[in-house]
Image (cartoon, rainbow, N blue to C red; front, top):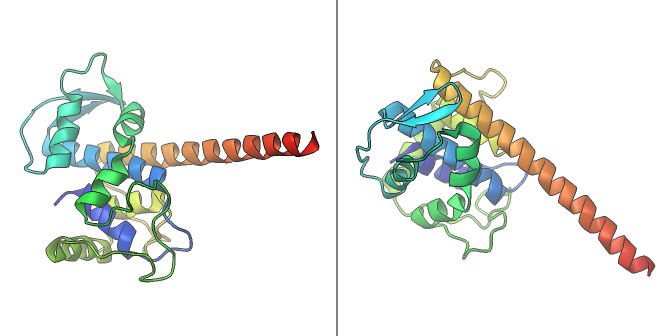
Amino acid sequence: MTTAHDLTIVSLEVPSDYPVERGDLSLALAGAELIDLLEAGTVALDGLLLRPVSPSGSGDRLLDAAAASLAGREPAESVTDWLWRRGDGLAAQYLAAAGADDGGRGRPWRSARRGADRPAPADPSARRRATDRWAGGDPVLVGLAAAVGLRHESADQPTDPEDDRIATVLAAVHDAVVELAATRQRRSIEEAAFDNIWRGM
């Protein structure tokens, strides 16, 4: 299993004060894929630009699709551009792979109450791997989960990744999620203003 699969399971298993937003998870999943590709040597980071290195397969359908989408891209893509491009609709694919698709409704899919509206992942061994990684405070998984609003008990004393490439991706994921939240807020304000105009006519 990959970091993205682990993050999907954690998003289904870990209670939080607010439901996980589909768009936030999609961005974090794209970051998780990129981290795995970097660690596998499939792609290299040249400053903030991605350089495909080796097309070797991972055996995971979604991660291999991520690697294939990088091959031959010119000009070189930035980490941020990758998150937005690859992240488009990505949560639906991983939720389906985990056996927890919400039918494509595209909204937060679970309540903050433990067990409420929360289907269990189909593969028990995958669930065990993800939850063990979470319990151990894996800095990559904890960092990605934090971006979507899932707080680990080690959050007050986080362990920074030793790999600068991973730190770069985590920072980009957090920035993208903040940008997406600002976009949501702006749209909400614009829609409310539009509704008020119609009510006043």
